[in-house]
Length: 65
Image 1 (cartoon, rainbow, N blue to C red):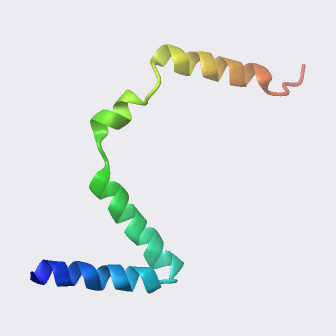
Image 2 (cartoon, helix red, strand yellow):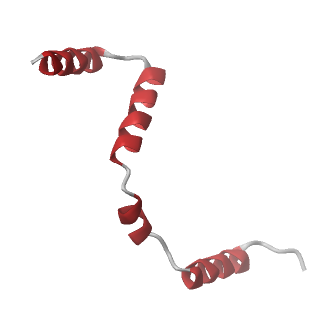
């Protein structure tokens, strides 16, 4: 029951919070608490895809000849 009261107090406090620095810190805490390496790894690109994208990017640069 004490945890429920603490959660409610935190929710009330956060909903009234306007300090951007504290909000950013809370966002980092949330991101770290919910980060799933396996899921993020699945979203990654292969080495071949990286090579292809990098080559395309380099060709698109305005090189002086």
